[in-house]
Length: 466
Ligand code: AMP
Ligand code: ZN
Picture 1 (cartoon, helix red, strand yellow):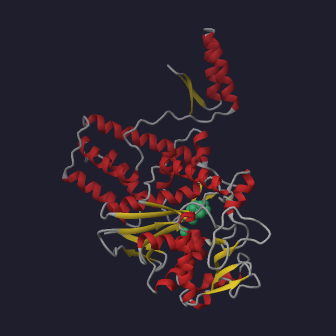
Picture 2: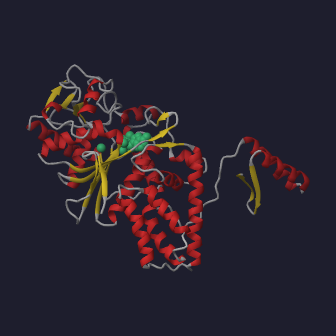
Picture 3: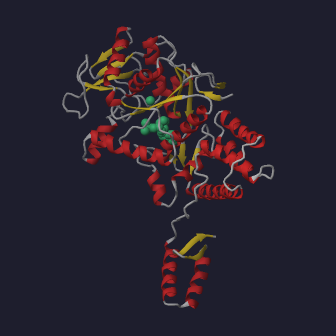
């Protein structure tokens, strides 16, 4: 039985799908104006764990959008469109920017073994559906016009603060985050359709019954989620930052338009943070998967790091924790491969193995307790209670959720070495080429004093931290 923490009820609720023949899940996707940072990727890893766990029991329709227009610099409809800003920054068209960063996003997503959604929907390919939804809201009296767009009147929707709770909405109203334009009726009102500026030609714009312009970011998700998944979804996911504005606005639009409940379970992942503070794309302080790869880490080591923290706790990123995740992954693989060899590749799916699988599944079904599932995996692999064949059966199953390539040999860690050690290694390579063994040994000692052990392998010298 699966339990999920539901941001709407503020409880861990038993998961009961609307239709067991097909569970529906919508995940807010990337805004493709820049690289995804590893914080964004943490959210997709947790969503992948959720998808894989749900699939143990149900067929799943998983929809993810790609925001390629309309996400303004402030979530509250102020500032410029991130896509057009990206275009100006790089001297490319907004369309090219979207194409480039979307491709990059999927490369990262795949490298982290996140399962591709059943449907990927691009905002720019669903403008008609968005216009239709705004029209419905207009007919029902939820909209008004200002000089820069069509706005949603949040005072007309009496459950507007349901997701966040009254206190936080009040905080939001008083806060600096929402700059109240003179024409907005309420601080929380938001744009459904924005007009193109009169003095500037936008690259991405469309005709609409209200004038040429582009959709608001929130209407994108409502229109696409309901197109593919119906008026009521089982699950809607995203990062915790989306609770107060984006998801609150999605509920307001969707429920006002259909008169039905929009989402049964709201599931939000906590942030990855840096010691120095928040990881932010627009602020420029972000680490990408490419940066980790350049430093010699394999993408799955980052997945391992994320699995080690519950998705509802903040995770502070550091290179020390990446080092330890890499090491643990390597050790877990070595033990998995030992079991595979000892069993001669023959998995034994006995009652005992199944009992361990159940322990693993129970952890995942308890609000995705991946740290516990990982601990069960470590326990199993070291346990004398399981034969090698049973371990193999368990590990094959565990890896279908963890997806850490447990049966693949780890690449030797390529760590960044301090410049001093690099220099000593280069000198030692020269000494060895000149068959000066005495000097080579002296340099080995110097390297050891710097904290590294050097090994001579058929591929040359390899230095590892002591
Ligand atoms: P974006 O591409 O900015 O629209 O964000 C994509 C996803 O990443 C959303 O679900 C965000 O809530 C989530 N997100 C943004 N920053 C972080 C972070 N530092 N840690 C975890 N998730 C994040
Ligand atoms: Zn969204």
